[in-house]
Length: 356
Image 1 (cartoon, rainbow, N blue to C red):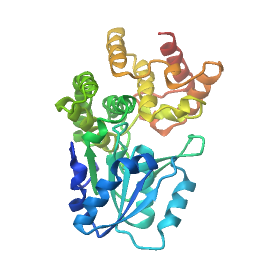
Image 2: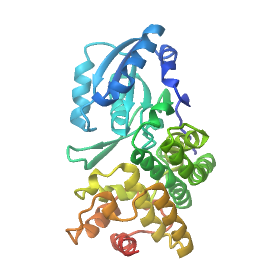
Image 3: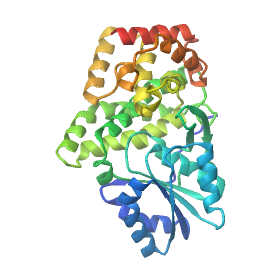
């Protein structure tokens, strides 16, 4: 059996946030808008005006900044005194993942409004939960993929470039992870075999990222929104999300388990962590030097991490590589590989990367 999951509706383009009212009205009459203080200042007025025009009531809700089980409980308690049809989560991956679980608890429709393209969380039904120290502690699921993903590229273009580079990293890895998952007979996020459509999307995602990253960065530097940026955002948010959920994950994402327990590295953006994880995966795949040289060149152009130091590692502990390897080796995604992987294999790959 194969399963392919996707959002009910995806809208992308400059200025599309002003159209959200009609979209919300098709889902219900009352909506919670979850955002932190900074994002509220960016999107709040536009959402309220569009919703009012469409006859949709808005209840603002402030996100505390970290997706923890305690934060989800706090938010549920804050709005449980009334019935809400829709949860709109506006912001980055933490806010959006929190919104997914809030909507699940409230049995409400879910709309994601990413203000950055730093990962593919906006399209998925998966939510990654951390503790107060940003250590990964759980992976939860919403009841379904979002009812709407609305991506305003005029807002995305104004975000710091490092956030987009993280999105590039998260998108880049999907080709290699889906290939390994399917090759190993692994299950996708839906617990089924992966459809060929997911593999095709993963390849298209990789090709798009490789073609459009550098010119998209140049467009942002010029203050322009062009077809390169639109293509890169689509790859980072839509293609990447569809590929990973329906195609499956492997070593690159498995590495986040170990990376998230190391101080400094734990605070690195998810897309940068998995980009480093891809280097580990490519070494474990025994890629030849020409391939690795090409990938290293792209990493430099895309501003992706080549060393643990680029993720915030202080280099003080000689045992950190072993710790990363041991914890990562226990990740379920590590089993979706063409051969068994041990902690020693991972430590050797990291050592090779660090010495390159």
